[in-house]
Image (cartoon, rainbow, N blue to C red):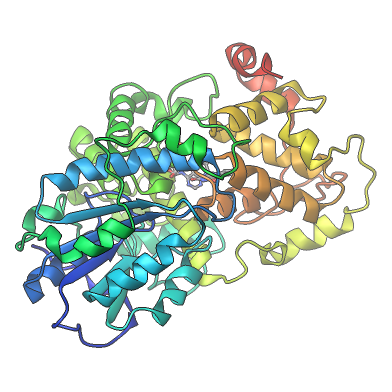
Length: 489
Ligand SMILES: Cc1cc2nc3c(=O)[nH]c(=O)nc-3n(C[C@H](O)[C@H](O)[C@H](O)COP(=O)(O)OP(=O)(O)OC[C@H]3O[C@@H](n4cnc5c(N)ncnc54)[C@H](O)[C@@H]3O)c2cc1C
């Protein structure tokens, strides 16, 4: 088995494993999958090295910020797929859904007291860094967080990249080195020691692990004390659906990706972001599948195009365009969150953006809407209302309309700081892919991050890039979209 490279490993407790303990513990937080997962691979590596079995603990926390039945359903569906995958291996899967807040904290304490090594996920945003740091207080053995976020390790960049162009150059210069160490497709196949259920007999009887053969998800969610105003999305979570969606995209949308990705009525983008956010599928797997489809390999790379949006990969225009989103843009967001502590604060915007926004903060607004009016799609703008309805009802929103959606919130909120807080609230509360490093990329992009000043200077926007619903309506055929989402207002 390939070893997990050092640039993916951060030891939060840099001590020797406690070899007298019973198993290696992998505590799942973000990388909720069994394939192409460096964190799981590292846990297998430790288990084999210490000749111990592996327990995979996957707690579903009840009371995290913005938690709702929408995300719980999506995560539970993902856990069911993991359960099925792990049942065919030597590892033991411990899926646990809290029914009272913080119940899993004691379970983590008990499980880690029996662990020779604890491995968990290294994710740079949301409450995860605080939670993994806090766990140092209860874990008394070697404790590592592992980065399985993308193709580029998140912790080794020497500086913050403030434009996609700069990050693209960094990536082009280094990616081939990073691709030398690729994650195993199925690390659990390499696990040597079988887990004996007796090791956790007493624990299992107190903290009931989910038994998916008898688990009634609907009843469970109905009885749970959780926000139900954010309704379940029709989109089903889990690796199986993610893989289905990937296959569908590669057969149908991918061939038109470069030209039709921005068209809201077309089905040309992957719609994989909810699955990527939940960790149900690895970006590495998507990369591999596109390479297979296009017969692309590292030999295709054209170094003369370092830093350019097109040409460096030496592939089709669809490949160039798709990898620019999946790798450049997606991973830029992760890097910003790692290199900038205030990544989710107004103060993190570029100086020119703050200056121009402040100069126009008191400009008269023709329309001012409250957060609740925005939630309910109660604006005068038919396109915006439809986009918000899609977000509120289904938990997704098309990329182009998402840009317009954010720009309009800047225009209609009482001031830019409130606009930012409305955007974060709506995006994180309703979007299946919200609470992600790229939630902040997208929201902050609409206020100038990664962008430049644009002229002419306009009211409210100042020099921030401007978008209008009228132009959007001219540019795209929106009839079908408006019929579908407009009627629900
Ligand atoms: C206001 C605003 C808010 C956003 N909030 C989120 C969010 O909460 N979570 C999120 O993942 N993305 C967010 N984005 C980025 C982008 O809208 C989505 O990633 C994209 O629409 C997902 O659709 P897809 O999976 O079909 O993308 P595809 O076009 O198929 O791209 C493949 C993958 O590349 C990544 N990607 C694509 N576009 C971008 C982009 N512009 N920036 C960063 N990564 C990208 C995503 O992981 C995506 O799944 C936001 C953008 C804006 C303007």
